[in-house]
Structures are given as structure tokens and as C-alpha cells.
Image 1: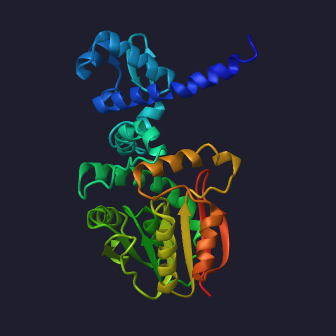
Image 2: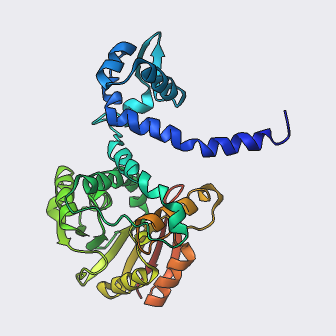
Image 3: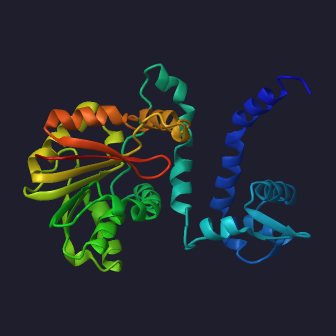
Length: 328
């Protein structure tokens, strides 16, 4: 083996990675994983999907190599990962995430133009559209997994009122309310998203302890007298000056002694997340006018400038960090 064979193989793997995602997208969009909830023969799969027998065979073999389907002779069914995450209504259903991610394909094709300074912004999803609902559901599926890890890091003892800015469907607010029975929450997001949040929080049995405020998180008027403000995965979509202005508004809305918690993909140069942050930063360049992957040091500087004290960084998973600071 030549000395540089390993390097060549690695480069080929990176260059071909998009083909695997396209196979996954196509299979999911066709309903393959719902069809393979029970074992099926190849001819039945091809007929149900509307695919050629030859194409069906290649797709199934490719998905098997990815660990998503298994074969018993010429009969196929979902592997455990697909059963848990790719069947409609599965416990960890990632269908909305796949649909949302697939919609970003055309945007990433424009990366070169974006790097040259030519606008590649897709803009916000139309309020109430299926694209917006898929985006909200995709982010919710992630939040539901992360909320149990974050809730113990937010000390709500002796606190009465928490604001969740850019709340999505309310996974974090629900986790805080369930952990602290005396707590009440104010949830801020667009009207269409709040309709989804109301349904979710009612199902969790905490909607009666929530107040819903519709508006743009960048401009909405925050109620005064808050004890805690929670902001999760919001600032990365904004210009730095919008982030600074938001943090200043948070300072004004909090009571003395109130706490600000900012959860985001804060780049603190930890090796385990080093591969994620720069790619995410490019994603924000493509999909927002001024967003990016901010560093923990930048967020710390913004909170200090607003008047917050005693800031510290908490680890909330492999990729995410929480910067928390106190109003004197």
C-alpha cells in the first residue's frame, strides 16, 4: 500500500458523502421505512415504491451498508435504527428533520456564490407553511432529547417566572415547569409556532402555567419582573448587533438577581466539537442574513457589556454550551 493511500481514501469518502444522504432522502420520501416495518420481498418493495427492480436492489444494499435495513434472503425489513427513527410515529421519528435538511440541498449548492459575497439567503419559511412546520418539528425533536440534560443546569429554586425566548414547541419550558412546580413560564415565538407549542404543552399538562406572547424575538417587548430568561439556539441566526441588543433588553427585563441562560452552538474550541462548528457557521451564512457560529468569548463580552456579572460556561452536550450570567 502506498503511503498516501489512506489520505486518498479519506478525501474520496468526504467527496462522496452527499450520495449517502441522497439515498436516505429518496428512500424516506418514497415511504420505504414505513413499508419495511414488516418484512417484505424485493418485488413487492419495487412495486410499492414505483422503482425499477434494479434500482430497488441497489438502494436496499446501500441502506444495508448504512445499517438502516437488514436482509433475510431476498426479504428486507428495517434495522433497529430505522425502526426507532425513520418510521412515521416512531419514538424518535426524525422525518421532519430529514424533510427540513433535504430542503437545504439547493442552498448548499450555492455555497461558492455565498463565499464570494453573493447573497444565498433562502429567507424565513412562510408562516404556517408545511416547510415551517417541518422546521419547527425538526428542532423540537432535537430539543426533546436535550431538555432533560439542560433542566438540571438551570436553578429555578425560589424563582417564580421564566421567559423562553424563541421557544419553538416548548420542550425546554416543559422540562423546567415539570421540574419546578411553583414556576410559571412566558413563551415567545411567532403566532404559528405558538399554536404548535400550545398543543404540545397541553399534552404535557403544563399549558395552564404558561403565558404566550406572539412576536419577533428580536423586537417583541419583554414583560418586566422576570426571574430567568432562557434563550436556546436563537442568537446564531442573528447579526452580532442584534444579539447585543437582545441581551441588553434581557438585562432590563430581569429582576435584580435574575439569571440569563444562553444555550447555543458556542464555539469554545473543544476538539470533540471542532468538526461541527465551522460547518454550522457556513450553514448560517447560507440561511440567514447575519448569523454565524459565535464563540463563548463573544457571548461573554456581550453579557458583560449589558451589565451582567458572574458569567460562566456550562457544557450541555457534545456540541452545545450554555453561557449563564447574573443581573446584580
